[in-house]
Image 1 (cartoon, protein in one colour):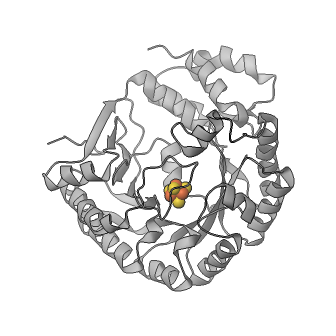
Image 2 (cartoon, rainbow, N blue to C red):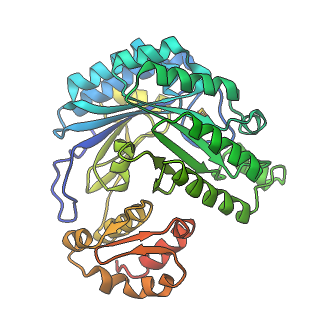
Length: 396
Ligand code: SF4
C-alpha cells in the first residue's frame, strides 16, 4: 500500500502549521472546453462509481490524517453536475471521517449551465458556504469562442439566484486575453461583474496549455493569440478597474472585498498543508507533495484494491522549499515576510536576494519595506522572470 504522509510530519523547513485545506476533485463535465487542461471526462454514467471510490479514498485516509481542516473546496471538473443531496452525502462522509471545523469555509464551483435556483438552495442546505460561479465572460460571442455550454444571461441569472440563496460568499470567474476579445469587451465584462456587488472575482489570463485543443489550433495557425501587449494592458485594466470598484488585488488573479478572500486558496499561496482527493488531485503536507492517478479507471481500481490512488510523490529539498516560498509569496500582494523567511530557512533574506532585487528595483516592479518584499501590480506581469532571477541565488 502506498504510504501517505499525515500533516503532523515534522520537517525542519516546515512552516508553522495552521488547519489544513481539503480539496475534492469532481472529474466530470458536460462538454470539454477547448482551453482547459483540468482532468475531467464527459461520461456521466460513472458518477456513482466515482462517488463510491471517493468515499473509499476517505476511508483509506481517515486513520492516516490527524490534522483538522477548516476549508473544503469542491472543484473540478464540474462539481455542480452533482445534485444537492449527492453533495450532502459526500460532505457528510468527509465530516464523519475527518476533523472538519463546524465553521469551515465550504466552497463549490458552479458551472452556470448546470444549475437552477432550486439546486443552489439545495447546495446551501447541504452546507456549502461559498459559491464560485464560472461565468468566464458576459459576452455570448466570447463564450462561444471558449466553447462554454452556457449563455451570458444564464450566468447572470445564476448569480442573482446565488445572491438570493444566502451563501456567505459569492464569487465569479472571468477570463481575458481571449482571441477576438477587445479592450472594450473586457471593460464591459468587468463593469457587468462589478455591478453584482459580490464578494470575490477571479480573473485569469488565458493560457495555451500543452495538449489542449486551443494549443493545437494555435500551433496549426488556426487560432491567433492576442499580442502580449494587449493582454498585458488587459491585466493592468483589471487591477485598476477592480481596485477602483472596491476589489483590491490580493493575488495575481484574485480580487476581493476586504476580508472576503478565499480562505482555501490562500492556504496554497502561504504553503499551508492541503489534502486532495479524487483523480488527479494533489496534496502537500508541508514536506512532501503527492498526486493521485489522473485517470478515473485507475483511481477506482486502486481504491477497490485497498490502495491509495497515489501516482507519485516527492519530498521537497530545502532549496525547493525556498523556491516555492518565493514563487508563491510573490504571487500575493502581501508578498514575502523577510523575518518569516529568515526564521524558516536560517538565512539573511537581504543578503541572499539583495543583488537580484537591486537589479530590478529601479524598474518599479517591487513594493518593498523593511519587513516585506512584494511585487507591484506591474511586477506581477514579470513574475516568472523575477522568480527565475531570484532562484539563481538559491544554492542546491
Ligand atoms: S473549464 Fe470547467 S467546464 Fe470547461 S472543461 Fe474545464 S473544468 Fe470542465
